[in-house]
Amino acid sequence: MKHDAGKALLAADLAGTFLFGIEGAAAAIRGNLDLLGMMVLAFSTALAGGVVRDLLIGAVPPESIKNWRYAATAFTAAMLTFLFYRMLQAFPATLLMVLDAGGLALFAVAGTEKALEYNIHPFMAALLGTITGVGGGTIRDIFLAHVPRVLQSDIYATAALAGAVVLIVTRRIGASPMAAAFAGGGCCFVLRVVAATRHWNLPRIAG
Image (cartoon, rainbow, N blue to C red; front, side):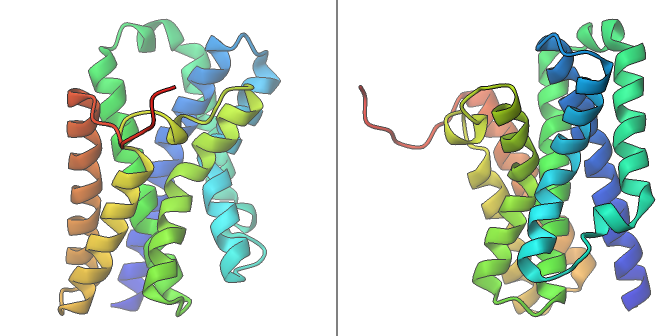
């Protein structure tokens, strides 16, 4: 059972890595970066959140550095984006948002699960799941000299945090790790998609 859970966690991590690698590479192209810059941004967007999580929980070296599959997945996503960017541009903006929400949900779930595996307190595990989901995008925006989207756009980090909390609560009431992961990931995904569609934002003070 533990082996199956580990395989599921790796699959979620790699799927999120691929989706965020595409997003990072596309952002690099829009920012007029060259091929090397695109690779760096794809790698950072896909893996920075997981690296920060692993460093904070003491899982060193970070799994995304120790396991070559992570870097290979991020670079593959970058090259596919480079080769087929014109095709990617033709995709509806809604589809790209849905893919981004999927990546966010996968990383939030994987990050929370790994923190729980290391016996981190559930409150901190939820925060680490959120960091896993939004950390890469934050680094991407900093590299591009933008205010991180997570701090100003729609419901993003809040969706990751909500998914992490649902996962933990579902685990606490006796659900299996897989069922809890689906519940948490589904909550994050649906909240992010609905928030983006309806342009929900957290309260702010008008300037």
